[in-house]
Length: 193
Image (cartoon, rainbow, N blue to C red; front, side):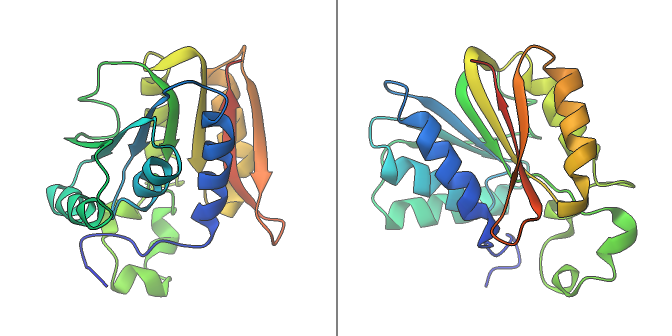
C-alpha cells in the first residue's frame, strides 16, 4: 500500500479489456493513461500491446514516481511519463485516451472508508463528482485522433450524467455506458469511428 496512489480496483480491469480490444484494431497505437496513479492501466496496456506507445500522466509527482518504479519492474520501454493536470500539458493527439479520473462526489467522500488511506486528490470529483470528467471531456476534443476512442471509468451513479456530457462534447461519436459484472454503470466509451 502506498499513500500516494489508489489501490487498483477490479472494475478497472473492464476498462483495460475494452482498451486492449480497441487498440488491437490500430497499428502502433498511441495511448494515454490520464491520472495514471500507480500505473496499473498504462503498464497493462504497454505489456499487452508491445507495439504501442503509452504515455502515463498524472498531476502528482509522487504518483508518477510510483508508476515509473512499477513500470521498471516490468521492464517496459514503451511507457513515457508526463506530469499534467489531466491533459493540460499534453499537446498531441492519441488513438486511445484512458482515464480513471477523480469521480466521487465530495459529499460522499468522508463517508467512505477509502478516503482514510487513499489520496483525496485522486478521489474528489467535486460537488457532483463531475469536475474532472467535464474538464477531461473538453480537453480531449482536441487531443484525440478523428477515429480514436476515449474510455472513462466512472462512479456507478454518474452513468447518465457522464453519458450526457460525453454526447455534448462529442455529438458525432458513438457514446455508450459499459456495465460491470454486477450490472452497475462503470465505463463510458466514446468511439469516434
